[in-house]
Length: 80
Ligand SMILES: [Zn+2]
Ligand SMILES: [Zn+2]
Image 1: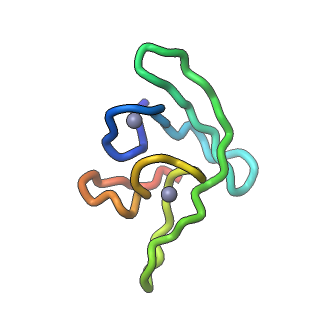
Image 2: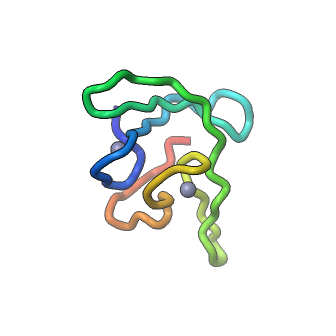
């Protein structure tokens, strides 16, 4: 499982497990270094890039770090 957030030094890591649940939500695995793994249902991040393309964010509402469309260092492809 790979963390979906942009590179960060602390805080929880999140990996998308499935988007098969209720519309607008997804099931995420949350973990920390040397700690237990949690399963959490989170709503999709509603923040969309400005501009004509209006690219959506692949993460969940209230996430830390950058929106996926802000993160130009890492090539993120939405698994959804
Ligand atoms: Zn992480
Ligand atoms: Zn976002």
